[in-house]
Length: 578
Image (cartoon, rainbow, N blue to C red; front, top):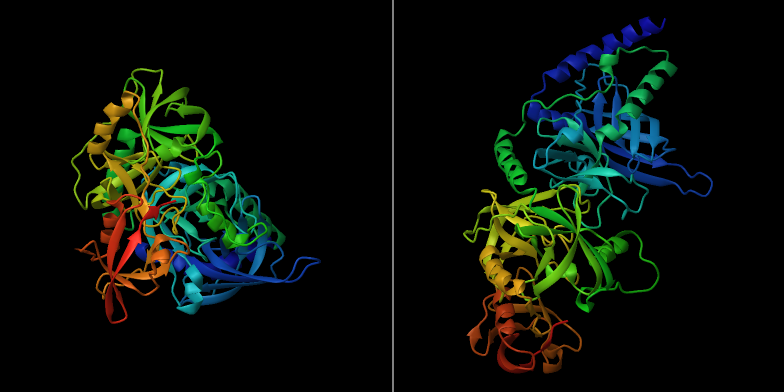
Protein backbone atom coordinates (compact mmCIF):
# COMPACT_ATOMS: atom_id res chain seq x y z
CA UNK A 1 0.00 0.00 0.00
CA UNK A 2 2.79 2.39 0.95
CA UNK A 3 4.60 1.75 -2.30
CA UNK A 4 1.49 2.21 -4.42
CA UNK A 5 0.74 5.53 -2.72
CA UNK A 6 4.28 6.63 -3.29
CA UNK A 7 4.14 5.62 -6.95
CA UNK A 8 0.96 7.63 -7.41
CA UNK A 9 2.49 10.67 -5.73
CA UNK A 10 5.71 10.26 -7.67
CA UNK A 11 3.89 10.07 -11.00
CA UNK A 12 1.94 13.23 -10.19
CA UNK A 13 5.17 15.04 -9.34
CA UNK A 14 7.29 13.70 -12.16
CA UNK A 15 6.25 16.22 -14.87
CA UNK A 16 7.11 19.13 -12.60
CA UNK A 17 10.38 17.53 -11.57
CA UNK A 18 11.45 17.00 -15.16
CA UNK A 19 10.31 20.46 -16.21
CA UNK A 20 12.33 21.92 -13.37
CA UNK A 21 15.50 20.40 -14.79
CA UNK A 22 15.02 22.27 -18.06
CA UNK A 23 15.00 25.72 -16.43
CA UNK A 24 18.15 27.69 -17.37
CA UNK A 25 20.68 28.07 -14.57
CA UNK A 26 20.22 31.85 -14.35
CA UNK A 27 16.47 31.43 -13.89
CA UNK A 28 16.68 28.82 -11.11
CA UNK A 29 17.28 31.25 -8.20
CA UNK A 30 14.13 33.16 -9.13
CA UNK A 31 12.07 29.98 -9.57
CA UNK A 32 13.18 27.92 -6.57
CA UNK A 33 13.06 30.87 -4.15
CA UNK A 34 9.65 31.74 -2.68
CA UNK A 35 8.08 34.50 -0.63
CA UNK A 36 6.51 33.47 2.67
CA UNK A 37 3.93 35.06 4.94
CA UNK A 38 2.82 33.38 8.15
CA UNK A 39 0.63 34.07 11.16
CA UNK A 40 0.51 32.67 14.67
CA UNK A 41 -2.59 32.69 16.89
CA UNK A 42 -2.54 33.84 20.49
CA UNK A 43 -1.38 31.05 22.76
CA UNK A 44 -1.64 31.66 26.51
CA UNK A 45 0.41 34.82 27.15
CA UNK A 46 1.97 34.84 23.68
CA UNK A 47 0.10 37.36 21.51
CA UNK A 48 -0.96 36.71 17.93
CA UNK A 49 1.65 37.79 15.39
CA UNK A 50 2.35 37.97 11.65
CA UNK A 51 5.64 37.28 9.88
CA UNK A 52 7.14 37.49 6.42
CA UNK A 53 10.36 36.52 4.72
CA UNK A 54 11.84 34.15 2.16
CA UNK A 55 12.25 30.42 1.63
CA UNK A 56 13.87 27.86 -0.68
CA UNK A 57 12.29 24.89 -2.43
CA UNK A 58 14.67 22.06 -1.55
CA UNK A 59 12.81 18.99 -2.79
CA UNK A 60 10.57 18.05 -5.74
CA UNK A 61 8.36 16.38 -3.12
CA UNK A 62 7.09 19.80 -2.01
CA UNK A 63 9.36 20.81 0.90
CA UNK A 64 10.36 24.42 1.52
CA UNK A 65 13.17 25.48 3.86
CA UNK A 66 13.12 28.77 5.76
CA UNK A 67 13.99 30.25 9.16
CA UNK A 68 12.09 30.23 12.46
CA UNK A 69 12.17 34.02 12.31
CA UNK A 70 9.91 33.70 9.24
CA UNK A 71 7.80 30.73 10.36
CA UNK A 72 8.11 30.26 14.13
CA UNK A 73 6.61 27.30 15.99
CA UNK A 74 2.78 27.17 16.23
CA UNK A 75 2.11 29.08 12.99
CA UNK A 76 -1.29 28.00 11.67
CA UNK A 77 -1.49 29.93 8.39
CA UNK A 78 1.42 29.82 5.94
CA UNK A 79 1.34 31.21 2.40
CA UNK A 80 4.00 30.30 -0.16
CA UNK A 81 4.26 32.50 -3.27
CA UNK A 82 6.38 32.06 -6.37
CA UNK A 83 5.84 35.41 -8.14
CA UNK A 84 4.07 34.84 -11.46
CA UNK A 85 3.87 31.05 -11.04
CA UNK A 86 1.87 29.83 -8.04
CA UNK A 87 0.49 30.62 -4.60
CA UNK A 88 0.15 27.70 -2.19
CA UNK A 89 -0.90 26.97 1.36
CA UNK A 90 1.83 25.41 3.47
CA UNK A 91 1.90 23.18 6.52
CA UNK A 92 4.64 23.43 9.15
CA UNK A 93 6.52 20.14 9.44
CA UNK A 94 9.31 21.12 11.84
CA UNK A 95 10.52 24.28 13.62
CA UNK A 96 13.75 24.23 15.64
CA UNK A 97 14.91 27.60 16.98
CA UNK A 98 18.30 26.22 18.06
CA UNK A 99 19.30 25.94 14.40
CA UNK A 100 16.70 28.37 12.95
CA UNK A 101 15.31 25.51 10.86
CA UNK A 102 11.69 25.72 9.68
CA UNK A 103 10.50 23.09 7.22
CA UNK A 104 7.20 23.56 5.36
CA UNK A 105 5.30 21.14 3.13
CA UNK A 106 3.18 22.20 0.15
CA UNK A 107 1.36 20.27 -2.55
CA UNK A 108 3.15 21.08 -5.83
CA UNK A 109 0.69 22.42 -8.41
CA UNK A 110 -0.23 19.95 -11.13
CA UNK A 111 1.35 20.74 -14.48
CA UNK A 112 3.42 23.64 -13.14
CA UNK A 113 7.22 23.26 -13.00
CA UNK A 114 8.37 22.92 -9.40
CA UNK A 115 12.16 23.38 -9.60
CA UNK A 116 14.25 22.98 -6.49
CA UNK A 117 17.76 23.82 -5.28
CA UNK A 118 20.61 21.43 -4.75
CA UNK A 119 22.91 21.94 -1.76
CA UNK A 120 26.60 22.33 -1.08
CA UNK A 121 28.51 22.36 2.20
CA UNK A 122 29.50 25.91 3.09
CA UNK A 123 32.80 24.59 4.48
CA UNK A 124 33.84 23.78 0.90
CA UNK A 125 33.29 27.40 -0.20
CA UNK A 126 36.50 29.41 -0.19
CA UNK A 127 36.79 32.95 1.17
CA UNK A 128 36.27 35.25 -1.80
CA UNK A 129 34.06 32.85 -3.79
CA UNK A 130 30.98 34.27 -5.50
CA UNK A 131 27.73 33.94 -3.52
CA UNK A 132 24.18 35.05 -4.29
CA UNK A 133 21.24 36.16 -2.14
CA UNK A 134 17.64 35.95 -3.38
CA UNK A 135 14.99 37.52 -1.20
CA UNK A 136 11.51 38.85 -0.58
CA UNK A 137 13.10 42.11 0.57
CA UNK A 138 10.57 44.51 2.12
CA UNK A 139 7.86 42.13 0.77
CA UNK A 140 8.91 42.93 -2.80
CA UNK A 141 7.36 39.67 -4.04
CA UNK A 142 3.88 40.52 -2.79
CA UNK A 143 4.05 44.26 -3.40
CA UNK A 144 5.85 44.36 -6.75
CA UNK A 145 5.60 40.75 -7.88
CA UNK A 146 9.39 40.28 -7.90
CA UNK A 147 12.13 38.79 -5.79
CA UNK A 148 15.41 40.66 -5.38
CA UNK A 149 18.80 39.21 -6.26
CA UNK A 150 22.27 40.35 -5.21
CA UNK A 151 25.70 38.97 -6.10
CA UNK A 152 28.65 39.30 -3.72
CA UNK A 153 31.46 37.30 -2.13
CA UNK A 154 31.84 34.88 0.74
CA UNK A 155 33.40 37.37 3.15
CA UNK A 156 33.84 35.41 6.36
CA UNK A 157 33.19 32.29 8.44
CA UNK A 158 33.06 32.64 12.22
CA UNK A 159 31.01 32.06 15.36
CA UNK A 160 28.42 34.62 16.47
CA UNK A 161 28.34 34.78 20.24
CA UNK A 162 25.43 37.16 20.75
CA UNK A 163 22.31 38.40 19.01
CA UNK A 164 21.22 41.93 18.18
CA UNK A 165 17.89 40.80 16.75
CA UNK A 166 14.47 41.24 18.29
CA UNK A 167 13.58 37.55 17.89
CA UNK A 168 15.47 34.48 19.11
CA UNK A 169 17.98 33.41 16.50
CA UNK A 170 20.66 30.80 16.06
CA UNK A 171 23.96 31.36 17.85
CA UNK A 172 26.92 29.47 16.45
CA UNK A 173 29.05 29.30 13.33
CA UNK A 174 27.81 31.44 10.45
CA UNK A 175 28.96 32.25 6.95
CA UNK A 176 29.10 35.92 5.96
CA UNK A 177 28.43 37.63 2.65
CA UNK A 178 28.88 41.00 0.99
CA UNK A 179 25.76 40.32 -1.11
CA UNK A 180 22.84 42.49 -0.02
CA UNK A 181 20.50 41.42 2.78
CA UNK A 182 17.47 43.42 3.87
CA UNK A 183 14.38 43.03 6.05
CA UNK A 184 12.56 40.11 4.47
CA UNK A 185 15.78 38.38 3.35
CA UNK A 186 15.82 36.14 6.40
CA UNK A 187 14.97 32.52 5.68
CA UNK A 188 16.10 32.89 2.07
CA UNK A 189 18.93 31.02 0.38
CA UNK A 190 22.57 31.97 0.38
CA UNK A 191 23.71 30.36 -2.86
CA UNK A 192 27.15 29.61 -4.20
CA UNK A 193 28.06 30.88 -7.65
CA UNK A 194 26.44 27.86 -9.31
CA UNK A 195 23.14 28.16 -7.47
CA UNK A 196 23.67 25.58 -4.70
CA UNK A 197 22.24 26.44 -1.27
CA UNK A 198 25.10 26.83 1.21
CA UNK A 199 23.15 28.53 3.99
CA UNK A 200 19.89 30.05 5.22
CA UNK A 201 19.98 33.83 5.65
CA UNK A 202 19.63 34.88 9.28
CA UNK A 203 18.61 37.97 11.25
CA UNK A 204 21.75 37.45 13.27
CA UNK A 205 24.73 39.80 13.02
CA UNK A 206 28.23 40.08 14.45
CA UNK A 207 28.75 43.17 16.60
CA UNK A 208 32.19 43.58 15.04
CA UNK A 209 31.19 43.07 11.42
CA UNK A 210 27.62 44.19 10.60
CA UNK A 211 27.36 42.23 7.35
CA UNK A 212 24.74 39.68 6.32
CA UNK A 213 25.15 36.12 7.58
CA UNK A 214 23.60 32.71 7.02
CA UNK A 215 23.32 29.51 9.03
CA UNK A 216 25.45 26.90 7.21
CA UNK A 217 23.40 24.24 5.47
CA UNK A 218 25.43 21.46 7.09
CA UNK A 219 24.19 22.61 10.54
CA UNK A 220 20.64 21.57 9.62
CA UNK A 221 21.06 18.98 6.84
CA UNK A 222 20.60 15.81 8.90
CA UNK A 223 17.61 17.32 10.73
CA UNK A 224 16.10 18.18 7.34
CA UNK A 225 16.52 14.66 6.01
CA UNK A 226 15.09 13.13 9.20
CA UNK A 227 12.13 15.52 9.28
CA UNK A 228 11.22 14.78 5.63
CA UNK A 229 11.60 11.03 6.13
CA UNK A 230 9.40 11.11 9.26
CA UNK A 231 6.78 13.25 7.56
CA UNK A 232 6.55 10.86 4.62
CA UNK A 233 6.28 7.85 6.95
CA UNK A 234 3.48 9.51 8.91
CA UNK A 235 1.63 9.96 5.61
CA UNK A 236 2.17 6.33 4.70
CA UNK A 237 4.70 7.02 1.94
CA UNK A 238 8.13 5.67 1.16
CA UNK A 239 10.72 7.61 -0.74
CA UNK A 240 14.06 6.65 -2.28
CA UNK A 241 17.06 8.13 -0.50
CA UNK A 242 18.12 9.88 -3.71
CA UNK A 243 15.10 12.20 -3.44
CA UNK A 244 16.04 13.40 0.04
CA UNK A 245 18.14 16.60 0.30
CA UNK A 246 21.87 15.94 -0.06
CA UNK A 247 25.01 17.96 -0.68
CA UNK A 248 26.73 18.07 -4.04
CA UNK A 249 29.78 19.78 -5.47
CA UNK A 250 29.72 23.14 -7.27
CA UNK A 251 28.20 23.25 -10.73
CA UNK A 252 28.48 25.57 -13.71
CA UNK A 253 28.82 29.25 -12.65
CA UNK A 254 25.69 31.35 -13.16
CA UNK A 255 27.69 34.58 -13.53
CA UNK A 256 31.02 33.70 -15.23
CA UNK A 257 32.18 37.34 -15.23
CA UNK A 258 32.00 37.38 -11.44
CA UNK A 259 33.93 34.13 -11.21
CA UNK A 260 36.93 35.73 -12.93
CA UNK A 261 37.06 38.52 -10.33
CA UNK A 262 36.49 36.03 -7.54
CA UNK A 263 39.52 33.96 -8.60
CA UNK A 264 41.70 37.06 -8.33
CA UNK A 265 40.35 37.94 -4.87
CA UNK A 266 40.90 34.39 -3.62
CA UNK A 267 44.48 34.52 -4.85
CA UNK A 268 45.05 37.78 -2.95
CA UNK A 269 43.74 36.24 0.27
CA UNK A 270 46.02 33.21 -0.05
CA UNK A 271 49.07 35.42 -0.65
CA UNK A 272 48.64 37.61 2.46
CA UNK A 273 46.76 35.45 4.96
CA UNK A 274 49.87 34.65 7.01
CA UNK A 275 50.68 38.37 7.39
CA UNK A 276 47.31 39.42 8.82
CA UNK A 277 46.98 38.81 12.56
CA UNK A 278 44.32 39.11 15.25
CA UNK A 279 44.81 41.45 18.22
CA UNK A 280 43.16 40.89 21.61
CA UNK A 281 43.10 43.99 23.83
CA UNK A 282 42.38 43.92 27.56
CA UNK A 283 41.35 47.52 28.22
CA UNK A 284 41.10 49.02 31.71
CA UNK A 285 39.60 52.31 30.53
CA UNK A 286 38.67 53.59 27.09
CA UNK A 287 39.78 56.82 25.45
CA UNK A 288 36.93 59.35 26.07
CA UNK A 289 36.77 60.12 22.34
CA UNK A 290 35.79 56.51 21.60
CA UNK A 291 33.15 56.16 24.31
CA UNK A 292 29.88 55.22 22.60
CA UNK A 293 27.34 57.90 21.86
CA UNK A 294 24.40 57.64 24.25
CA UNK A 295 20.86 57.18 23.05
CA UNK A 296 18.31 59.80 24.02
CA UNK A 297 15.59 58.82 26.47
CA UNK A 298 15.66 56.46 29.41
CA UNK A 299 15.36 52.75 29.93
CA UNK A 300 17.02 49.84 28.20
CA UNK A 301 16.92 50.20 24.40
CA UNK A 302 15.29 47.40 22.45
CA UNK A 303 14.90 46.49 18.80
CA UNK A 304 16.20 49.05 16.32
CA UNK A 305 17.26 51.47 19.08
CA UNK A 306 19.46 48.78 20.57
CA UNK A 307 21.00 48.01 17.18
CA UNK A 308 21.79 51.70 16.66
CA UNK A 309 23.27 51.93 20.16
CA UNK A 310 25.60 49.03 19.42
CA UNK A 311 26.44 50.42 15.97
CA UNK A 312 28.04 53.48 17.53
CA UNK A 313 30.01 51.63 20.20
CA UNK A 314 33.27 49.69 20.44
CA UNK A 315 32.18 46.07 21.00
CA UNK A 316 33.41 45.00 24.42
CA UNK A 317 36.29 42.56 24.02
CA UNK A 318 36.02 42.33 20.24
CA UNK A 319 39.06 40.97 18.42
CA UNK A 320 40.62 43.50 16.05
CA UNK A 321 43.26 43.25 13.33
CA UNK A 322 46.92 43.97 12.70
CA UNK A 323 49.46 43.46 9.91
CA UNK A 324 53.01 42.11 10.14
CA UNK A 325 55.11 44.80 8.45
CA UNK A 326 58.60 43.58 9.39
CA UNK A 327 59.77 39.97 9.98
CA UNK A 328 61.49 40.98 13.25
CA UNK A 329 58.12 41.21 15.04
CA UNK A 330 56.84 44.67 14.06
CA UNK A 331 53.06 44.81 13.66
CA UNK A 332 50.99 47.71 12.35
CA UNK A 333 47.49 48.44 13.54
CA UNK A 334 45.09 51.33 14.14
CA UNK A 335 45.49 53.69 17.09
CA UNK A 336 41.76 53.20 17.64
CA UNK A 337 42.51 49.59 18.58
CA UNK A 338 44.97 50.39 21.37
CA UNK A 339 43.51 53.67 22.69
CA UNK A 340 42.85 54.10 26.39
CA UNK A 341 44.42 52.53 29.48
CA UNK A 342 45.46 48.96 28.69
CA UNK A 343 46.14 45.94 30.85
CA UNK A 344 47.61 43.82 28.08
CA UNK A 345 47.77 43.18 24.33
CA UNK A 346 48.11 39.78 22.74
CA UNK A 347 48.72 39.06 19.08
CA UNK A 348 47.32 35.83 17.61
CA UNK A 349 49.27 34.68 14.56
CA UNK A 350 47.71 32.84 11.63
CA UNK A 351 49.10 29.53 12.94
CA UNK A 352 47.35 30.07 16.30
CA UNK A 353 50.37 31.14 18.36
CA UNK A 354 49.60 33.84 20.92
CA UNK A 355 52.31 36.41 21.73
CA UNK A 356 52.43 39.25 24.24
CA UNK A 357 52.80 42.58 22.45
CA UNK A 358 54.15 45.98 23.46
CA UNK A 359 52.90 49.29 22.12
CA UNK A 360 56.04 51.08 20.89
CA UNK A 361 54.68 54.18 19.19
CA UNK A 362 51.65 55.75 17.58
CA UNK A 363 50.40 58.53 15.36
CA UNK A 364 46.92 59.60 16.38
CA UNK A 365 46.59 62.00 13.46
CA UNK A 366 46.86 59.15 10.95
CA UNK A 367 45.22 56.57 13.24
CA UNK A 368 48.31 54.35 13.33
CA UNK A 369 50.01 52.34 16.04
CA UNK A 370 53.09 50.10 16.07
CA UNK A 371 53.34 46.93 18.17
CA UNK A 372 56.34 44.71 18.86
CA UNK A 373 56.36 41.00 19.66
CA UNK A 374 59.45 39.02 20.61
CA UNK A 375 59.47 36.69 17.65
CA UNK A 376 61.55 36.66 14.47
CA UNK A 377 61.12 35.28 10.99
CA UNK A 378 57.51 36.39 10.69
CA UNK A 379 55.82 36.61 7.26
CA UNK A 380 55.80 40.36 6.60
CA UNK A 381 53.52 41.90 4.01
CA UNK A 382 55.02 43.92 1.16
CA UNK A 383 54.03 47.59 1.05
CA UNK A 384 53.11 49.33 -2.22
CA UNK A 385 52.79 53.14 -2.34
CA UNK A 386 51.72 53.08 -5.99
CA UNK A 387 47.93 53.29 -5.93
CA UNK A 388 45.53 54.98 -8.34
CA UNK A 389 41.92 56.10 -8.28
CA UNK A 390 39.67 53.21 -9.28
CA UNK A 391 42.12 50.43 -8.35
CA UNK A 392 40.45 47.28 -6.97
CA UNK A 393 41.34 46.66 -3.32
CA UNK A 394 40.64 43.98 -0.71
CA UNK A 395 40.02 44.89 2.94
CA UNK A 396 41.30 41.93 4.94
CA UNK A 397 40.77 41.37 8.65
CA UNK A 398 40.82 38.68 11.30
CA UNK A 399 37.75 39.33 13.44
CA UNK A 400 35.57 38.40 15.27
CA UNK A 401 37.36 35.04 15.25
CA UNK A 402 41.18 35.03 15.31
CA UNK A 403 41.08 31.73 13.42
CA UNK A 404 39.38 33.01 10.27
CA UNK A 405 40.05 35.80 7.81
CA UNK A 406 37.39 38.17 6.56
CA UNK A 407 37.36 39.80 3.13
CA UNK A 408 35.46 42.68 1.59
CA UNK A 409 36.27 44.28 -1.74
CA UNK A 410 35.84 47.59 -3.53
CA UNK A 411 37.80 50.32 -5.28
CA UNK A 412 39.95 53.24 -4.24
CA UNK A 413 37.39 56.05 -4.48
CA UNK A 414 39.54 59.03 -3.44
CA UNK A 415 43.21 59.80 -2.74
CA UNK A 416 44.48 62.42 -0.32
CA UNK A 417 41.25 62.84 1.66
CA UNK A 418 41.41 65.42 4.45
CA UNK A 419 44.40 67.03 6.12
CA UNK A 420 46.02 63.62 6.72
CA UNK A 421 45.77 62.65 3.03
CA UNK A 422 44.00 59.35 3.61
CA UNK A 423 42.97 56.80 1.00
CA UNK A 424 39.20 56.43 0.67
CA UNK A 425 37.72 53.13 -0.50
CA UNK A 426 34.23 51.67 -0.80
CA UNK A 427 34.72 48.15 0.57
CA UNK A 428 32.76 47.61 3.79
CA UNK A 429 34.99 48.25 6.81
CA UNK A 430 34.14 48.15 10.48
CA UNK A 431 35.55 47.69 13.97
CA UNK A 432 36.61 44.12 13.21
CA UNK A 433 39.01 44.85 10.35
CA UNK A 434 40.23 48.21 11.63
CA UNK A 435 44.03 48.00 11.68
CA UNK A 436 43.97 45.41 8.92
CA UNK A 437 45.46 45.46 5.46
CA UNK A 438 44.07 47.18 2.40
CA UNK A 439 45.58 45.07 -0.37
CA UNK A 440 45.83 45.55 -4.12
CA UNK A 441 45.24 42.79 -6.62
CA UNK A 442 48.99 42.09 -6.77
CA UNK A 443 48.94 41.05 -3.10
CA UNK A 444 50.83 44.11 -1.85
CA UNK A 445 49.52 46.32 0.94
CA UNK A 446 48.48 49.80 -0.20
CA UNK A 447 47.30 50.97 3.23
CA UNK A 448 46.46 50.28 6.88
CA UNK A 449 42.71 50.51 7.52
CA UNK A 450 41.60 53.08 10.09
CA UNK A 451 39.37 56.07 10.60
CA UNK A 452 36.46 54.21 12.22
CA UNK A 453 34.22 56.58 14.14
CA UNK A 454 32.00 55.78 17.11
CA UNK A 455 30.25 59.14 16.75
CA UNK A 456 29.37 59.17 13.06
CA UNK A 457 25.73 59.39 12.07
CA UNK A 458 26.36 56.29 9.97
CA UNK A 459 28.65 54.45 12.41
CA UNK A 460 30.18 51.46 10.64
CA UNK A 461 29.65 50.42 7.02
CA UNK A 462 28.54 53.87 5.85
CA UNK A 463 29.58 53.00 2.30
CA UNK A 464 33.10 54.42 2.41
CA UNK A 465 36.09 53.76 4.61
CA UNK A 466 39.63 55.09 5.04
CA UNK A 467 43.20 53.89 5.24
CA UNK A 468 46.61 55.46 5.71
CA UNK A 469 48.41 54.90 2.42
CA UNK A 470 51.60 52.83 2.26
CA UNK A 471 53.79 55.88 1.57
CA UNK A 472 52.55 57.70 4.68
CA UNK A 473 52.80 54.48 6.68
CA UNK A 474 56.48 53.95 5.77
CA UNK A 475 57.27 57.51 6.88
CA UNK A 476 55.47 57.02 10.21
CA UNK A 477 56.96 53.54 10.76
CA UNK A 478 60.52 54.75 11.17
CA UNK A 479 59.45 57.42 13.67
CA UNK A 480 57.24 55.04 15.68
CA UNK A 481 60.05 52.44 15.86
CA UNK A 482 62.01 55.04 17.80
CA UNK A 483 59.13 55.35 20.29
CA UNK A 484 57.59 58.53 18.89
CA UNK A 485 54.01 59.12 20.02
CA UNK A 486 52.22 61.77 17.98
CA UNK A 487 49.07 63.01 19.67
CA UNK A 488 46.07 64.34 17.84
CA UNK A 489 45.99 68.13 17.81
CA UNK A 490 42.71 69.76 18.84
CA UNK A 491 40.55 69.98 15.73
CA UNK A 492 38.65 73.17 15.11
CA UNK A 493 34.93 72.99 14.47
CA UNK A 494 32.21 75.29 13.21
CA UNK A 495 29.30 73.26 14.54
CA UNK A 496 27.06 72.86 11.51
CA UNK A 497 25.60 69.88 9.67
CA UNK A 498 25.40 70.34 5.92
CA UNK A 499 22.42 69.34 3.82
CA UNK A 500 23.25 66.29 1.67
CA UNK A 501 22.56 66.48 -2.02
CA UNK A 502 22.16 70.27 -2.23
CA UNK A 503 24.20 70.38 -5.45
CA UNK A 504 22.08 72.94 -7.27
CA UNK A 505 22.91 75.74 -4.84
CA UNK A 506 25.98 77.94 -4.56
CA UNK A 507 28.14 77.12 -1.57
CA UNK A 508 27.03 74.73 1.20
CA UNK A 509 23.51 74.69 2.63
CA UNK A 510 23.24 74.35 6.42
CA UNK A 511 20.77 71.65 7.48
CA UNK A 512 21.26 72.13 11.23
CA UNK A 513 23.24 74.31 13.63
CA UNK A 514 24.32 72.49 16.78
CA UNK A 515 23.06 74.12 19.96
CA UNK A 516 25.77 76.11 21.75
CA UNK A 517 28.27 75.64 18.91
CA UNK A 518 30.46 78.46 17.52
CA UNK A 519 28.06 78.74 14.58
CA UNK A 520 25.11 79.02 16.94
CA UNK A 521 26.84 81.71 19.01
CA UNK A 522 27.69 83.67 15.86
CA UNK A 523 24.08 83.63 14.67
CA UNK A 524 24.18 81.18 11.78
CA UNK A 525 20.83 79.61 10.98
CA UNK A 526 19.33 76.59 9.28
CA UNK A 527 19.02 77.13 5.50
CA UNK A 528 21.87 79.66 5.43
CA UNK A 529 24.38 78.94 2.65
CA UNK A 530 28.12 79.30 3.36
CA UNK A 531 29.72 80.70 0.22
CA UNK A 532 33.31 81.36 1.37
CA UNK A 533 35.70 81.10 4.33
CA UNK A 534 38.08 84.08 4.69
CA UNK A 535 37.38 84.89 1.05
CA UNK A 536 38.13 81.38 -0.25
CA UNK A 537 35.11 80.06 -2.19
CA UNK A 538 33.33 76.97 -0.87
CA UNK A 539 32.00 74.64 -3.55
CA UNK A 540 31.00 71.68 -1.40
CA UNK A 541 30.98 70.08 2.04
CA UNK A 542 34.52 68.71 1.60
CA UNK A 543 35.81 72.22 0.77
CA UNK A 544 34.21 73.61 3.92
CA UNK A 545 35.60 70.81 6.12
CA UNK A 546 39.15 71.18 4.74
CA UNK A 547 39.12 74.98 5.11
CA UNK A 548 37.96 74.78 8.73
CA UNK A 549 40.44 72.02 9.59
CA UNK A 550 43.29 74.09 8.16
CA UNK A 551 42.65 76.61 10.96
CA UNK A 552 43.34 76.33 14.68
CA UNK A 553 40.92 76.15 17.57
CA UNK A 554 40.18 79.71 18.71
CA UNK A 555 40.85 81.28 15.29
CA UNK A 556 38.36 83.90 14.11
CA UNK A 557 37.18 83.27 10.56
CA UNK A 558 34.94 85.36 8.32
CA UNK A 559 32.19 83.47 6.57
CA UNK A 560 30.45 84.80 3.49
CA UNK A 561 26.85 83.73 3.94
CA UNK A 562 23.67 83.98 1.86
CA UNK A 563 20.44 84.18 3.86
CA UNK A 564 17.45 84.18 1.53
CA UNK A 565 18.46 86.77 -1.10
CA UNK A 566 20.86 88.66 1.13
CA UNK A 567 24.67 88.19 1.31
CA UNK A 568 26.44 89.00 4.56
CA UNK A 569 29.73 88.52 6.40
CA UNK A 570 29.63 86.67 9.74
CA UNK A 571 32.64 86.26 12.04
CA UNK A 572 32.94 82.98 13.94
CA UNK A 573 35.44 81.92 16.61
CA UNK A 574 36.17 78.23 16.01
CA UNK A 575 35.68 75.75 18.85
CA UNK A 576 37.12 72.29 19.52
CA UNK A 577 35.70 69.20 17.87
CA UNK A 578 34.63 66.56 20.38
